Image (cartoon, rainbow, N blue to C red; front, side, top):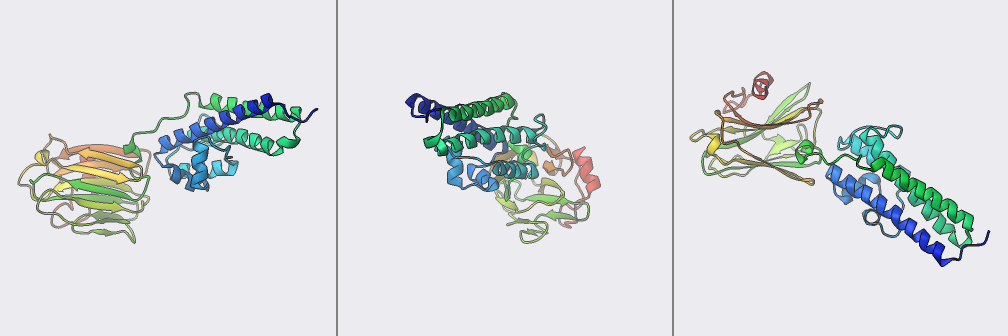
Length: 317
């Protein structure tokens, strides 16, 4: 077989290379959208230089994504519960689908990169084998990903997955004193972060309130640095009570590197507690309550005792 020197074959090789790059870049871009992380964060999880990762996403310079980098990336996303579990043998699972699709793209990239390295001494047969394997990998990618990759879930469902998280409460001039609370309940211990027990960022519960505002408007902020194996309940108490929550124009903004989620206080309902949301450690996950209740859990108010889970369940029912 003659050494390859045909300009047509070289152009064809470049076309295959471009297709591989674009397919891998498209997959990584869709993965970014799915999990709500930046390219820099994905690069860090995969152990890739951010500049090189950006070139992969944008299909430049034929950068190769290695199989161990795919496994590191998807494995950590599964561990962080941003992607569903699953292994390479089962593309019907989310984790398996991402692993297989990204590995197929990585295999195509690696095959082309290897061929390019050997191109000066390659034969026509070498080229045909490389092209066939790359095209087969590409077909596998599109077969696996044709409308099958999950869309990004609502930001609310990932509300505590990217840390640190800031909870910021603002409201109108009246009532003058609204209090932001974060209840954290594990099987062994419970914490209530609020004006009476401001918490800590350096030890459990890894959450802390900054200030207690008693003259209207806010803001009051709680920062959550780490999460525990616990249920999290976020709520607001109308401490001063001179006007109802329904006219308070209260807004809770939850912010992290993945973006912001905004909750507006309901304009109907009776009671002095606005239960915003809960995040459970079991299969229930995120639950948007967003309701004002007549039930007032024990521990809210001046005595600041820990939240009664029995009364909390009455509110959440």
